Image (tube, helix red, strand yellow):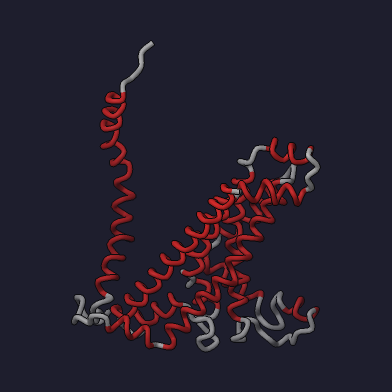
Length: 306
C-alpha cells in the first residue's frame, strides 16, 4: 500500500492552479470590468464635479458633494423611504417563506407544483410584475376593488395614488414577486435535516410546533441568517418597482435613494454628486450587513453555549 506525501499533494495542487485560473478568467474579467472598475471610478468621481455634458472628471470638489448630500432634504427623505421599504418587506419575506417552505416540506406528493407556483413569479422581469400590480391596484376596475369593497374602503381610493399607502403597495408587489427565492432556500435547507430527528422528537411526545421550535428553527439558523442578509441588501437597492409603478410619487413619497441617484446623474447631469450619494448608500449597506452578521454570530454562540 502506497501513501502520497504532503509534498506530492502540494505539488499536484500547484500544477492544477493555472488550469483553475483559466476557468475563472472569464468571470474575473467581467467582474473587474463591470463591478470593480465602475465602483472605483464612482468613488473617485465623488470627489470631482463630474458631469455627463463634458468629458473627464471635471474640477476637484473635495468633500463638497458629500456635504451637499448631507444638507439635502430629499436625500434624507429618499434614504428614509428606502429603509421604510426594507422594514415593510424583509420580515414578511423571511417569515412567510419559512412558513410556506415548512408546509410544503410536509406534503407527501406534488411538491413540484408548490415549488413552481412560488418560484414562477421570481423569474418574471420587474417590468412585467409592475404592470401586473399597477393593474391590480387600479381603482374601481382593478382586482383590488373587490377586497376594498369588502373592507368598506372607498372604491375610488387608489393605493398607489395615496402617499400614505403607495409604499405599502410597492412592498406587497415585491413580496409576491420575490418570496419564491427565499422559499427555495428554506426548502433546500429543510430537506437536509435528517428525518430521524423529527421521528425521535415525535416519539418523545413533541407536537408539530415543538418540533419546529426545537429542531427546524435551530438547524436552519444559518439559512435564516443568509436569507435575512440577502433580503436586506436587495431591499436597500430597490429601484425598478418604484420607478415603474409610481416614478417616486405621489410627489416624492416613494422616491428611494437609487431613484434620487438616477435623477441627479441623468436628469441634473451631475455624476459627481450622484456618485457621492452612491458611496453613502454603499457604506450604509456594508454597515447594515456587518451589524447583521455580528448579531447572527452572537446569537449562534449563545445557542452553542446553552
